[in-house]
Image (cartoon, rainbow, N blue to C red; front, side):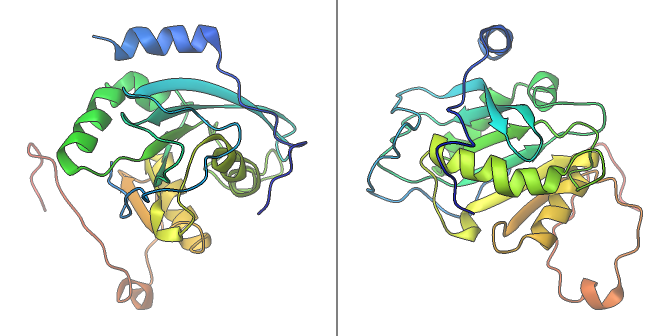
Length: 224
């Protein structure tokens, strides 16, 4: 989907939201691709930075017909002349884009992941309301992610273009959303991480035979 300059106004950082997240962060899944070497900088994109950041942004989403907020992690050494993988993180029921950031020290965990793997990525925490990340009579959230959020992020950040550079993960309701997006939009997402996904349907045996999966139990859980 292409994006014109009109529908998506430049993202703005909320001072109140940024103040809250700065207090929290002071003190994923790895995408398959790594940054490309050189490329023209994205016009109006996030500037180069030596240290990582976790900031709040808001932009106008035409599909939702309202302002839409998200949190974005940008890795240390970010260079707008390079291109980076993107990871979308989806919260659970009754959460918002700050939910996963407030529950754990996401910035420190992402810093550690980047430092240990050498694979920096831009990570965006999406505000999905209680939508299950699907289109409904109330709001077309899946359409908004594909037609509003992703084109906006491609203008805001220096991102790779190939599908295997785009991952989506989520917890509970967000885990359902991650699985739905990777199955419904394979031209855009090739990697999904579903943590305790809210899925109540049996997967058909025919689909199971074609679906590579990694299952893990926490160290305090007994596998049954």
